[in-house]
Image 1 (cartoon, helix red, strand yellow):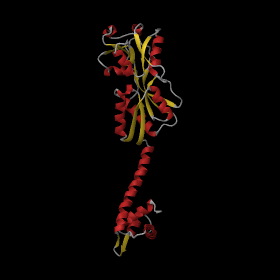
Image 2 (cartoon, rainbow, N blue to C red):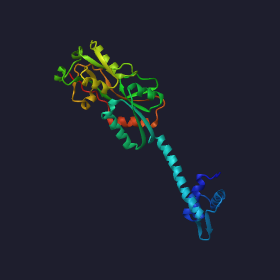
Image 3 (cartoon, rainbow, N blue to C red):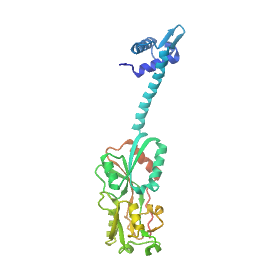
Image 4 (tube, rainbow, N blue to C red):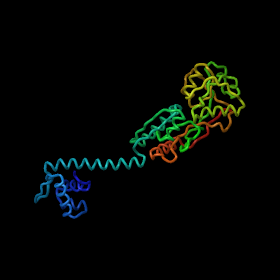
Length: 309
């Protein structure tokens, strides 16, 4: 097995390029005798002459030319190893696994993905759609590096939440519903309407808890007739005429015309919903932190959403 190292290859390349041991030694900032010994040892190790030595300098043998070409490739590969490792350590390359809920596909996630990819083109993104619970659990267990999740949410141990956008609820109504003729709707208007709610069994499901809390604060016991896990499912049930729902306003511009969305008036000031980036408290990768930095730069400071009066 050959014991040559990268230093020997650099010395060999220097001699071949300079066609002189003396000139190569000067370029390498070393004495000529040790350089001559190093090249001789390299030839002995390989078992064939690599250089023809003469009064006018040296030149590569046929075997030496083959060795030279391979040595150049080897050094380039070694530099690539080093540069790749440095890039990953800086969060400029590698892999970033992101779980996301359906709500962020309406503008938010594409915007951040594009901004991040422009800055870090060597990072390979792995995206997986999930529920809030699945995204939070995946981040907690290390299966995902980041998660776009709905807040407020139950935060699992070992997971941090960085809120990046605020939103408000609006009323989703079948297009022919009498309330759809109004410009705004109050929660009291929905007190006796069949309500499409959110499945409460998903631990960390922010929307179920947020909607129920609003009705409790308003002193209303909603009549829940159907439930859905995802917002898109709830809107589909509204479109089918099965009831009304409270949905994040971000969905309004993207839904069917058979669903009417109306602002809710008289909402409590602390009626907060939004989107956050979930990340691991102690094991966050550098590339995940880079993504969060891009999100802050791209979105700017959080501003409270406007509410209907």
